[in-house]
Length: 144
Image (tube, rainbow, N blue to C red; front, top):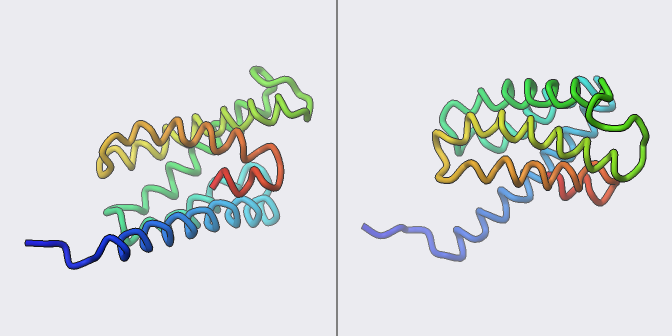
């Protein structure tokens, strides 16, 4: 049996999902920060990303919870100042992104590993994305 979708249709769907993901993550961060503050960003990002994932992943509702927990764990590590110097320079921003990307990436991996082959790469992608994302406006789009 052949796949009724053409390569072009599949390619369009992939780009659509990518765009939705970027928008969900970026808007989730902005809205979460604006409405709730740093500690609440994870739940809004998780909710926004869930809207993209729910037609694609069975039991995607866990995404909201694991993203929230991962964000809170990363945020807790950052605000203690134990690992990252308490300045606002570029190095501290990149390090904060790496911490958040690691915590959120591992948490989200717990959902992805059941449905995505080689889901472990998600942790590395999250580290890179959030490290770049916390460096400024352009970076916020890349973080998505």
